[in-house]
Picture 1 (spheres, helix red, strand yellow):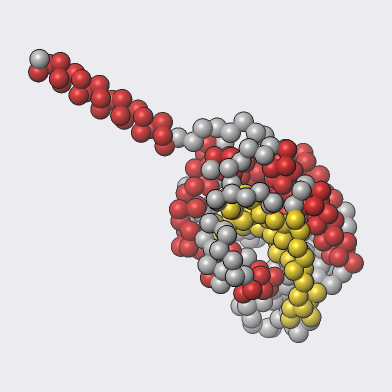
Picture 2: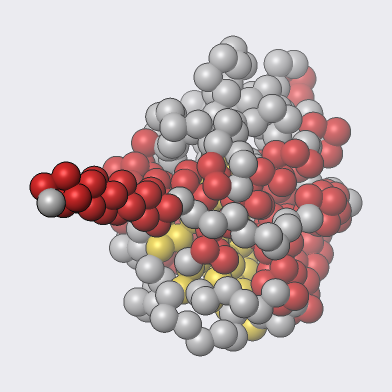
Length: 320
């Protein structure tokens, strides 16, 4: 009888252990992110030229982005503001807010900046420092992933959560390296404006996408993301692993980045993480060799990187 009880207890422990392990594993989502489509959205933005503040390309591309979200069934609000740059320039800023019409208990905000850097101030060639950046990666890639997600969410309406998108403006008017000015608050002006004026409570958490299409990119756990929203980092990195992209989302810590997620965390009080590329062995910049150079163009965008980030978010959204 004692042997029978022992065997029964052992079987129970084994079964309980197996159940726990299975419960901790995310089922793989079958819906596929289309990197070709995201790449085309990135190309379309760049076709307007550098989307620098106050330029015609900026205005035309902003309207195109808004129209695409509306095409996918989103309710679009254009939050316009005159913001002052570090040099006193008045920046005609537009945050593009795309609201999902679905009613759900959980609401996720995914965001990215859509403006382009007006100066290639990290270019190896100093004669390029005052030329605008095409911003294929540092700007267009995040918006491209969001547009493809919006298209997928319209096609596959089985997600239990609602996903809103915000394209922040005036992120990249920060003090250039060749300037003598010192102003730590010159970056992420559009998200600061949005977060300062945000009074809602609808978002459980948020994810910022910044430079998510670069060749050979990997996404380390950003410092402020871990500080403000560690559980969200763990949730997203777990989704990356389930989607088969654990090597691109390594469980390693990167540095802290001044980016749009800071005002979302500090002013809007929404736990927000930053999915941002990190190149620890790149001498030119830990943001990669094309960051703030004239080489941030479509020739240096990798569909595999877009796929890794996009499929990770699909895994997250449809597993919630």
